[in-house]
Each structure stands twice: as structure tokens, then as C-alpha cells.
Length: 592
Image (cartoon, rainbow, N blue to C red; front, side, top):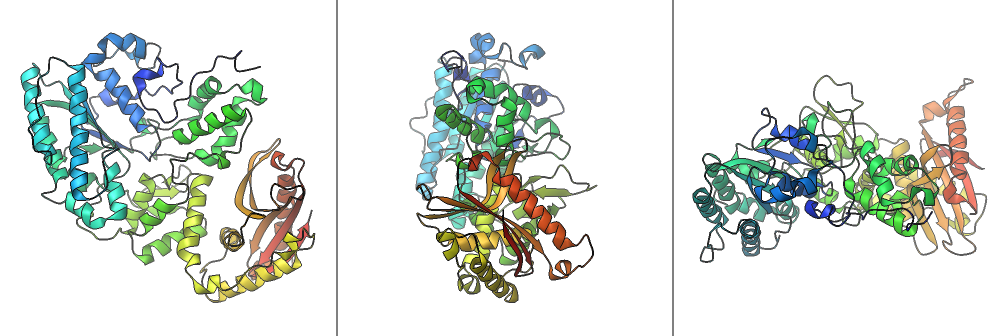
């Protein structure tokens, strides 16, 4: 069945203008029921909802604007009929004058550029308001362009003369986007702009002052709490409602939502797969985010999903999600590395060790207000909180803790960012780690015998374990250090992948430990599929009939045979190996 026979909607990837979705026949996920929770009298009139980047926060803000703003009253039926909130028939729809500020494009240059850019963002919101309310008169042409607080105050005074009541709704999108960028580059500038007399505090103080008489409600989105105290202490009536279970799915896609969305964007019959199979392929890479310990659902990164579905539709085939990641996301772990740079080495080492052990991260509570005007470095609790807010960690729904929080890495994408960052921070800079190379001559010559390779692995592991480059060796660490050494040898005719995603018929998405491709793209291409198991020397010397070693060999063998049958390897020359290490020693290596 061709696309001409199946009416598909346009993909909204990279777009946030809610009022154009239906007009341009774009697919969208209906998040409108969240309005009911925002309108609940038990919810703060000044909520702050934080989510990682690329989760659809801006689209949500535009939807709120269309729903609440009086100027959209004539389009209410067009925009909301058939939506979940439409049947609620709330009296608040189209009952406010909405002004919205988008700070996502504020410059992160020097202080003067920052001031000018922030002022422009505020005037953009005012100009948009004046376009929608042509009888509203406010001339700000002669105002000081380095004083956004006075600009907003004068706007509010003009609005009070314009409106009969307290009907102004202020929406701020990406309140901390520019501040987070500055923080990663220039701590001194960050502290300057967020100081007691900094322009940001006076701006938010101006909003608070008007909340007493002019502003009915506010709504603020952002990524992290690092700026919540630093930026908005002047607006200390704002309440962070990020972890309330009713808002867990306000941004990002649930599986139920994807089940509805996918057939609108791709012709599943033409692909020869079901919607469920597409979701199962995406799940390990894009899913796993949970923002409330009381929630029973996780969400997918929405931008990742939309980008992937765009590529699937273009290529008309089911693609490997790992190979089609949203280019606007942090794909190399650079921002994660910057984040670790704001904490002391001992704190970072503790977190990296925990990652290498494959254990959850525990903390008593999230840091809701992190003020870097008061501290120079993140504490462990603050660093883990920031990792959570930025999406590198998420709430562990399987935790049995009665109090506190258990955090885990949400998916394979984020796990690989941790892996890359660990390699850079823990291994690459270490002279002992870098002093030895692995012998890949047998792979380059397409041999079935890898004895020289395994011998070089033993020499290398013995070196880094005896020198305590790795404090604790286990299966995760084994995978990571061997991948890091093989990756040093990457070139046109030699490629290595860590935890490569594979589609196994009847089983679903699986991840092979190491996949080494030699002579890639040539008629002589050969793939070495390696499944690794790790035992301590004590475990390996167990002599009973159900010994650790026998079980490890069986597990590695079963897994490598399973992975070898993956559709990704169909028609390819694959040499599959099961390897078992006891301490640094390779005690089993067999091709299947």
C-alpha cells in the first residue's frame, strides 16, 4: 500500500506552534487534559514545570496560550473540538489576556549582548500581545534597553489601565535555557547576572510585585532547578510542581500516545510491521523517563521519536533507532562532561563507580533550589539532582525504598553517554590505561582464532587492575574498558560498537556487548560479534556441577547464538564469539 493510498499527516518535528497543527494537517499528541490539573484549586497559581530538553515543553506552552487567551476565542472550536479538555467544558477557556515570553533564544555571549538579547525577548512578547490586542496602547520606544524589569512594570501598568480586572496570565518558556548555557561556560558571568542586584532577579521581582494586583496566574517551564533560586528568588511565590504525579506525562510521549500517533505518520502496512513492533524497537533507546515516584508510566523523549519516525517514513523501512538520533540532543556527552566539571573529583568518582557497578543512585530528596551564588561546586545531592533534571537519570519505578529516591539511567542512549563520559574522565587521561594496545591483527586478517587478541586483553586488564585504574571490575566495566581500547583503533576499515542494538525475530530488541566490523562496506566485510561474561577468580574456581563458570559459558553461548540470528546480520559474514573472563584472565573463548 503506497503513501498516496494512506492519508498520512505531517510530522511536527522541530515545530511548536500549536495553532498551526490542524491548519497544516500536522499530527500531534493531545496533552490538553493537563489543563484540568492546572485549573484545580489545589494547584499553585504560579507553577513551575521542569523537563529535559526536547520533550515538547514549548508546544505545551503554545497550547495553553491558545486555550486560555481571549484573542483565540473565535478559534476555540477549531483548535480544541475533539480534544480531551473539550469535553470538560471548563469556564476558564479563553478567559485571560495572555502574554508569553520565550527565553530559548537569549544570547549567551558577554553581559552586554545578554542584556540586549533578554530585553528583545521581553519586547517580542509585548509586540505579540499588541498584535493580538490592537486597542492596547503601550509605547516603550524610549525605554532603557538594559532594564527589562522596568519595561515589564510599565507594561503591567498600561495593562491595568486597559483591563477591568485581574485577568493577565504570564507564561514564560525555557526560563533557564540561556542561564544553563552560561553556567556551562562562564560561572563568573552566571553569578553576575543572578546576584542580588542582577537584572534577572529584578525582572522576576517585577513579576511578583504585579502578581499582587495585576497578574492572575503565571506558568513557567524550564529544564533544571539550578537557576530556580538563582534567577527567581525575586519571584519566590513560584512553586516547583515538577514531581506531582498528575503532571508526569505532561511532556514526552507515553506508549498509548505513540500507538495513536505512529499510524498517522508512517504507513505501517507498507513497512510490513505493526505499530507495536515499531514501539518495541524505539523503547530501549528513547523510553524510560519517570518524573514522579507515584506514577505507573514512563515517557519517551518526544523529539527523538518524531525525528526517528520522520526517517522511517523517508526511508520506508524499519530503521535502527540508535543510528537515527535527534541531532539537537546531546549525542556525545559533552554537556554531561561539563556538568561533572561543576563538582569535585571525589563526588564525580563516586558517581562513576556507582555507574560501573550497575547500581541505582540513592538520594534523600531532590535539590529544588540550587544557588551557585552561594556554593562554588555541586554537592553529591545537587549533582544527582541536576542529572535527573537534565534527563541523564530518572526515577526508578522498581525501587522498594520507603523514603528518599532511587535514580537510574533511563535508556540505552543515556547509558552510552555515561559510557563515553566515563571513558574520557576516568580512562583517557590515565597514563597506565593509555600505555598498552590490544592486538587486533587476527580480526584484520579475518581469522577464526582470536588467541592473540584475548592474550592482549589479559595483559591490558592485568595492568589496569593492578594499578587500580578500575577500583571494581565487573561485567559493565569489562565491556567499557575493552570497547574504549578497541575504539582507539577505529579507522575506515575498522569500526567497533558498544551494546549495539539488534532486532532478533521473535525476541525483540537486544544489545550485543561488542560488534567489530572489519572492511566495512566492502565485498570482504566481516563482523566479529562478541558476548562477554565476567567472573571473579573465586567464582571461576568453583568446582560444583552448577559452577559459575559453566553457567557463564552457557549464558554467553545462548546469547551470542541468539544475537547472531538478528535481522541486522542477515546475509553478512558474522563470526560470533563467547568470551568469559575470570579477573583479568580470558578463561574461555569459542567461536559459534
